[in-house]
Length: 398
Image 1: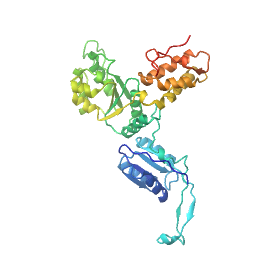
Image 2 (image 1 turned 120 degrees about the vertical axis):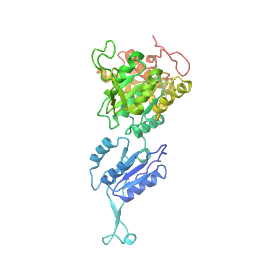
Image 3 (image 1 turned 90 degrees about the vertical axis):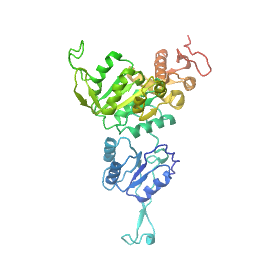
Image 4 (image 1 turned 60 degrees about the vertical axis):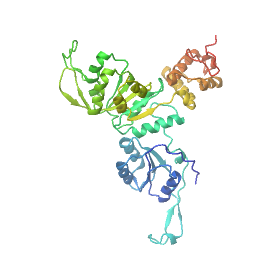
């Protein structure tokens, strides 16, 4: 039997479900969890697992490939569709069985009772990494800081809970919002993005709630509005800290009542919309100063997710840089560029005040400056607004 790595500590609620007809295999997984997760339940097959998934929320399902009633691959597709917040970890057993003394199992039929002695395939069963979340759709990085983000997103994706995504500019807040929508049961419906800072205050109400023909000068035809357009799906309020104070009461009413009233009519329409919001400033501090309604802040931050700056996830810098280079190579139909060791050291020590977006721009400039070469050197890394870890301005060598 292959050795199982150390099981990481669960840092949030969720629990584990173990589905296998093999009692020994189930008990081994329970033993490896070793109280790090609450609750832990066992299922004897696929149908039993589905029934338990219906009754509760589970962070991870340990699933035996050999089920007595359902095909494991088909079951995974069902789980991905109906329970997107549950991670599936496959268990492999070689199916060998060893006869044992039936003195312990005299109530079982047959002259000799036997129990399975599974050989766990370490490539298929990495219990030590069972809770290591894969990156979200559209995101790169496996650092511990991002692992926490992935877990939080997968936990809340299936809910209708309002989520506030916080973090510095350039950390990927819109990517998280899109992942929340993609992993949710609403993925087939619209994701409507509203940049609250980009719409003039005079137009914001009509843009969000819609208007009827003749509601104001220039309203030559009716407009449905961004919120009703997201019916059945998700509304993402980006830069919500810039939402005008005078409009915040109307936004709060919508969040509480799930009703909208178009300009120019008294008719109220109910909408089914899941709301996500993002802010690159400390919204709690703004609320405390009176620059943002406290009741709206509390309503938006029902489930906060904090994105770390790139400097706090340095293990992800090189994979992100290589990803951007690969994307640019594919777009330009050209060979993929490599990074020299010196370039890697500079990337890993740069402060990255502009976060992932700054890294993307640095890689784009470097891919241009390399001209016909195949390797990005330190001289190709140009930081117009930054310095390297030694405090020297980084410029292009002539």
